[in-house]
Amino acid sequence: MGSSRRFGVRWQAQRDTALDSVWSDRSSADPKRRRRFALPAHSKLVLVLLLLTAHCSLLTGCRRDMQDQPKAIAYRENSFYKDGTGSRPLVEGTVPRGYLRQEREYYTGKKSAAPSATPQTQTAATQSTSTPLYPDDVETIPMTITKADLDRGQERYNIYCSACHGMTGYGDGIVARRGFNKPSPANYHQDRLRQAPAGHFFDVMTNGWGAMPSYASQIPVEDRWRIIAYLRALQLSQQGNSPTVNDRGSSPTVREGSSRK
Ligand code: HEC
Image 1 (cartoon, rainbow, N blue to C red):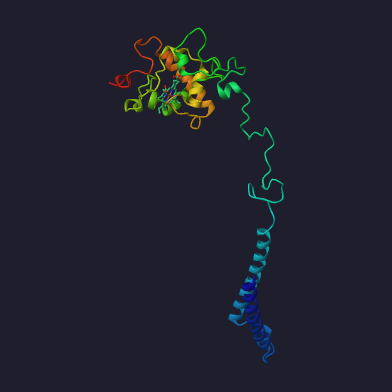
Image 2 (cartoon, rainbow, N blue to C red; image 1 turned 180 degrees about the vertical axis):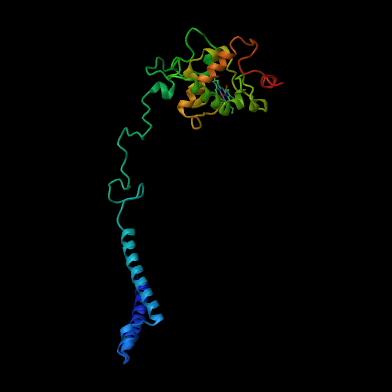
């Protein structure tokens, strides 16, 4: 502020000299010259600069006030509220827009009224077959699947799963063949996975399974169901096929390669 005021004073002095010279021009004897009221070129410049200066100092004056106004900044310390923060806590039960996720079956792949609370582990899979292996998981895909969904599922599967599980799902993708095989990616054409409910696949993709990481952040819920639809198609396509495939994926070498000529 101080410096701009000094600046202003300097220009005021220059303006006064400029005006003086104008007035002395007007009062000079020549009447023609008086009528034309011609400002010397440099005085015009001085006037313009002067106006500009005034304008600028007005503007900065305004900005200062706006800049320094009292306000609460989110999550910054603030003495106004008792808890010392500028943000108010969210009301209990607040849900961000688009995250309500009321349909439990659709968003978690779990039955809405869970029949059992016992966590299912992979070891349980090898045990008795009288009780269902994944009793909490929904049996079927909780959305209608059209041809377009299936196509999208195929596309997503090829992008996200085939690298490990192979294009046909025998667990012989390139990543497995290059060494990610302890344990190797599951072979979908084993009885346990043929019989597994749709919700189990959703669970695997959403939360990961053993050595397999979660794909929840890459694959939105809807696409996960579409991938499952495609997995089912893959399983059906191999239904009558090769009884020799083992539980932990086939030897991760032949299958994928043998489909090429
Ligand atoms: C980085 C490699 C990799 C990718 C990519 C991958 N998986 Fe897996 N997946 C594995 C491995 C390894 C296992 C075996 C994990 C274990 O048994 O510890 C597995 C196991 C599975 C199983 C069997 C779970 C069970 O009950 O035994 C399913 C189903 C499955 N993956 C589905 C998928 C789907 C669907 C995708 C694509 C969204 C996918 N995987 C992508 C590596 C991968």
